[in-house]
Length: 497
Image (cartoon, rainbow, N blue to C red; front, side):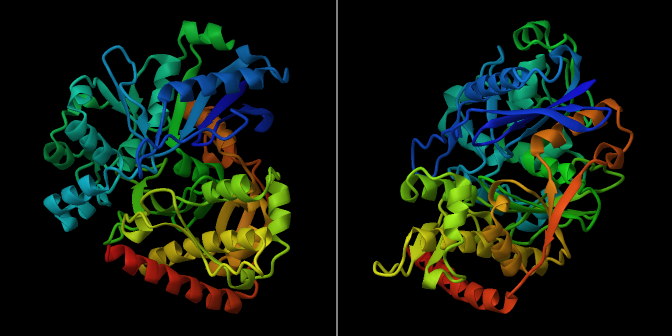
């Protein structure tokens, strides 16, 4: 018996096939090999085509099959992880009416701020744990206001993972966790938010059937089964946003446990047993994968949009086609502090930690006679680490003080330079694990079918690679204060425009 995990990321779709009995990964594949494009038809906009997601998903699954390490007909369940906060709108025939407005799109910021004011800040935070911000509800409102000819054709509103599950099965479902990440869920009344629906004029009929995260969200149709070499009736038994799924993949499920990622975006995600919120909604709280109204488990999410995407940008422009490991080695040639070079990594849309301001990325203090590509890369590592520190300090303001952070040994955490900069800037040790979001989604599918009785059983094979402890924190603190001064100047300039 095998489990298939699908991780719909911004850059690519990754799939893993796991043998349920041993929890061993037998095959992993991703598609496309190069990083997928984010469409930006206007400044601050970010879109992707849901149809391309679906084609990439199918191609990744087919590519995995070519390994020959398993019989595709023996896959019994599918789990899906997906990029959060995206808006997918379908017509009555199940066709996407437009490109998805994805997580880092900033066009709906003003829409969300007006809603926050109209609903009342205290009311919105008590009921939704967040401002509507530029989350999915605000994006849908933007479509309603600016593309009414499309809005009137909407049959169902979905998150990206809901869409992939629908394409596999023909069934339309969602979950409390998904609705909460779109700011459609009322935690106080434990129902679809009437206040959000009333304010924006949304019909409750626009939303799919609400199912538990771990449950049967549909069965693979005979047509899709033939196309992908699967057995008909394979169940989709787990769906979650990429950050709750990352936490699950690291067995981060109980209060006080913390996970981190540094992919296209960077995230610190802490679990709480309370309905907590940041009064300024700079960090956000959503329902975790194991949330139940009678057993609260929320995820406090700190997000920085411009992490891996900044590193990718630097690779394209500065590094002449070097691989990421070569890039990391080059960054390691520069000393701590990067000879005075400072980077603000905020060039990928509105940043929540900056009150939803679109500040842009900045490279400061360039000396044309001293600074090389190595210095710029090292300053990028440090700038990303300092942005994590800035957001973590907001979490600390709100009473959340992680003693240790778990992270997968992937993306920027593959770099020893970044590992040192992250723990030095935050002052928090990091445990690195042999972990992958698509593997977590596969094991989540096993939990959804009941094959695994507990998460501890499902993730019993999770292996720690090493712990990275903070060093030279005093020097990092000095550099951070310098970095923060530059940030504050830029924020003041932005406010005076």
